[in-house]
Length: 103
Image (cartoon, rainbow, N blue to C red; front, side):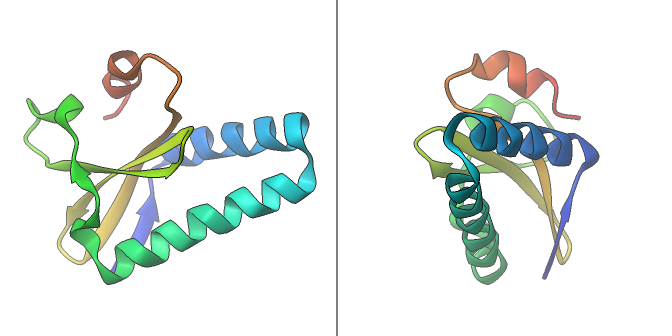
């Protein structure tokens, strides 16, 4: 298996990382990036580890989600031997609006 990030997810991840750096400093930013990397490694070993996300149940693709920490969620789908990270967002925001942005 391999992992590919959509451009949308890359932008969202970058925004979250910038926010963490600005609010909590570089040490916390590095810790957060390690948490994301660890989650991706888990998905590579167990692609179905995330729960099927009900926000996307009307779509033809099965989207799954994993919680990175209490404030961040990663949405992904599997196609063949590739895990596509489709979105990355702050769980404090309105979930339906964020789900609507996922293509």
